[in-house]
Image (cartoon, rainbow, N blue to C red; front, side, top):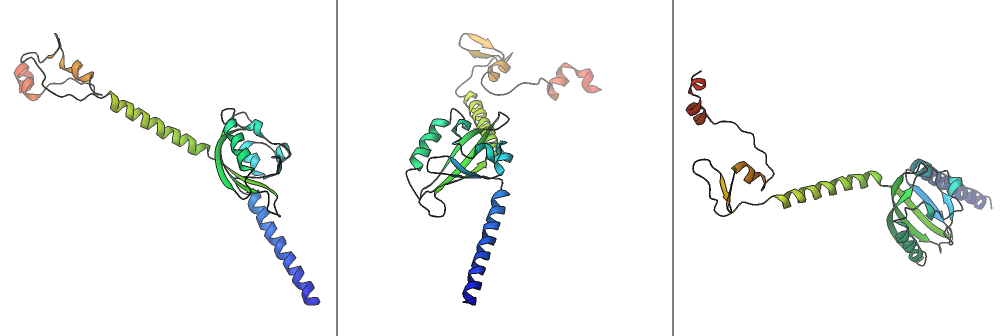
Length: 211
């Protein structure tokens, strides 16, 4: 009997320690952990919601919180949640923008676990991570790629035979003759800096060349 009592006490102590470790892990995580009931209302919200979105736990517990979702993202979020709630045991993820308490928008990546039929949980567990910096970096890369593609599209390759004046070096374009600099500038991403080669310098400015 004494051994059984001691064994139960050890099991309770081990469970308490496990729960304490889990609590510390959740409360000190940078991610937002949320548990929602079957009706979609927030049952639990980790303290990190204050660091990420600026709200207190008390402000969000008991709410559904869809009013915080960006209007452009809300239809997709509502549709995904509606389908996800119908599939116990499912796992899914979604990205959307949520409104910070200061009025700005935070990009979140949320991974959801449907544990509505799990006897110890009876809810949907969501883990939300702030990916705003990653989104900004991706947007910067996309802009660079778009600008590079536009630059490449604007470059025209010179092919074929060009009629060029043997004296003034103008290029014939249809019935007109154009300066070679203007002709090439219109067909490439270059600018010209005029100078003089040593041969021309000696021909036109012999005194300067001797000095």
